[in-house]
Amino acid sequence: MAILTAGNKQFLLDGEPIQLLSGAIHYFRVVPEYWEDRLLKLKACGFNTVETYVPWNLHEPKEGAFNFSGLADVEKFVQLAGNLGLHVIVRPSPYICAEWEFGGFPAWLLQYPTMKLRCMDAMYLQKVDRYYDELIPRLTPLLSTNGGPILAMQIENEYGSYGNDTAYLTYLRDGLISRGVDVLLFTSDGPEDGMLQGGTVPGTLATVNFGSQPEAAFEKFRQYREDEPLFCMEYWNGWFDHWLKLHHTRDAGDVADVFDRMLRAGASVNFYMFHGGTNFGFYNGANYHDKYEATITSYDYDSPLSECGDVTEKFNAVRKVIASHLGKKEEELPALPAPIKKKSYGKVALTEKADVLDTLSYLTKGIERTTPVPMELLGQDYGFIVYSTRVSGPRTGESLHLQDVHDRAQVFLDGVYQGTVERWDARPLQMDIPAGGAKLDIVVENMGRVNYGPRLRDCKGITEGVRMNNQFLFDWTIYPLPLDNIAAIPFGRVEAGSEAAGSETSTASNFGDRPTFYRGEFLVDETGDTFVKLAGWTKGVVWINGFNLGRFWSKGPQNTLYVPAPLLRTGRNEIIVLELHHTEETVIELTDTPDLG
Image (cartoon, rainbow, N blue to C red; front, side, top):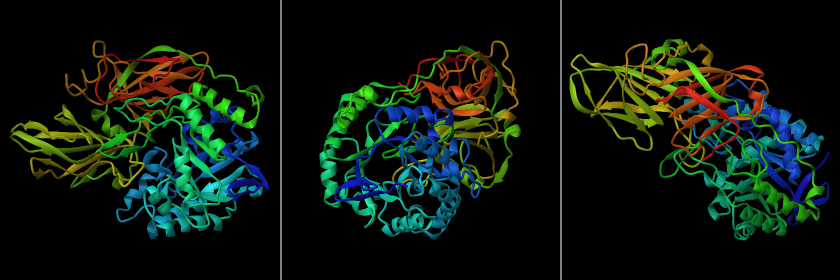
């Protein structure tokens, strides 16, 4: 049994002063087989604590249906950290941000249009309470007061950046206490007046999040909390990337210098991130400041430990600071585990294909609606959604408006590609309709829900309507495509001379860009980490042995997708690529070198 307390500007663990040197590792961004490797590397860097969020959408993917296995086995992760001699900080806030889809909220919350998030809304709190009734009893045996490794728990996440309903924060805090959480509770916010006023609760420890200028940040904190210990709960030592933007990096020397200054001030520090990992599947989030910007698949974050677990220059710089601070030589810190093998398996030809629009009946059932509706109102959470209707003709030079598309739509008229409408560039498409009318198909990609700020309610698909000029189109058939059962795809052989996606389909020829699945196999004699390189491909999603690796896009910055070795098997392996537009040839490469741009 160990008890962490805070007072007189310091932390005490069982009455003895302690400085928490923590690093963030999200169990849900790392395959479970690698949890121990990443935790041992955290310990080898000199840290004594690991911090993790808990994403509600991973643990309650469908309302009332809970998941705590595999990648979602938070109990196993916490137990493992404790067995390795690490303390644990858990942040199970209903909302986590984390550049994670919808900030960790489950998409099914959007089925309730009148529900208000992150406040004293009765319907919202009822959903939170049911989730906590399932989650918190799994964590209470792991509290330090019960002999476990969890020293502290967060009650909400950067709430002052969103609202000022302190009654809501108090409700969450009291809910944790009533469920048996008797370890130190805390809030975390930016070091600004409004944030510290709106996001903190009297009597509950406050912490601050920032990436630089620690003296100014702690000075602002001291204006609100004179006697509490200094704790940077999120030291942003790197940053995340958006599609269509450059890859972020930060100088290792600068990171080490800011860290050293915090330690000299007596502060505890949690590196956000120590090891970022990967936004596997459709779990990446998005930001909306001036416009919508989706986060990439990699969550490398330019962290001390890279996306694939490699030690970096930043790792070595941080380790040196910690060793000096502890009065030790670096070789006196715990040893690093052996590096994980990287393998290059070469080029893989994808020899089977299936046109998405031609095979909808195998993948989903059409739903009749008068108007287009977003996917959440059809019980869909992630993936794609197709809207189909007939448009009367003749019409010449009219404008097709998608009002309001979330997030990226490809438009087809009688199967022929007309163009793409993007949320951040939602210009209408000009088109002519023949005298007999035409079939209109719109394929919409959910590129990730907004995870931060005032636009959290981010429904996906066509959220308002479709117009030709000012005339709304009615009478739609809607096909949800969550792509959670790729085994149902009816593949056929790629015909000789038609390697390029869309160059030939079962309905007609030379349609141009059409969403198409491709499938291939490759043999593995020894498994190792590898990276899917998609030179010549445009945009889409990749699966390895049924596991969704995430999205790719030739516009970058990310140019490879990480494949952890545990996803591979000795012998035959399957790769499926959904290409939304076209590829120069149906070949991918498995290389031993990542490329994040």
